[in-house]
Image 1: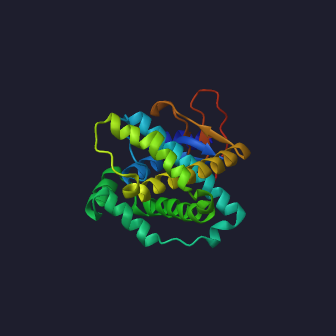
Image 2: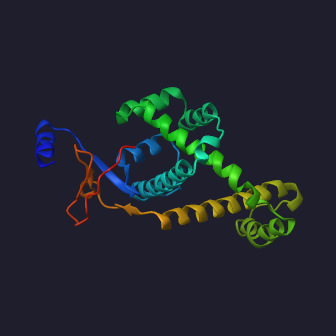
Image 3: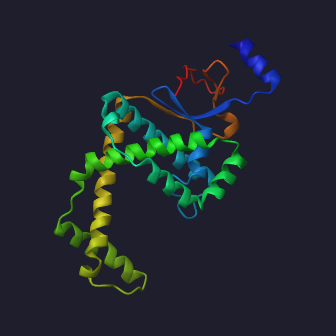
Length: 232
């Protein structure tokens, strides 16, 4: 391994930086870059680059946990997903095909990797919709409570016009449903992480561990062991 690393250094081969390990599978800096350029993770207003990168990394860790669960349980083969529609949403989100190609060219990353990431994300999303939808049903009382205790006061404090609840009930129902769905998915993901092993490397880029030419995760000098990095 030392000889391979020396040769790689000698010929100038750039090694991959690891942002996290999910049950031994690395989430690479290039994965984070792919998710960013495809706009797969919404960016909150005012979020700086470092914080956004952490947000994207966490999203990819969660995606990897869920993908592994679908694979090991056999549920993956039963998921039906419209990949063409998922890809079309990505293209639209970034501003069209030309803009996507421009971003890919600037990053030096192939479109095939973006498509694979979109495939995984869309498949997990479809699975979530089928599995957890029954737990996301809303009641009239829940909708009324969110409106009266949260949304209406927000509008009043902002000095905006407060509409009649019945005219916006469907939107409030969708919000409550989305929150319930998110809660169930987060609970599932937390259980997966408890049963597995996730290691995060939230450090400056130059201090992150790297994938060496032999496929291992090299230590960043922090004393972290260097487990093998399985092929994805």
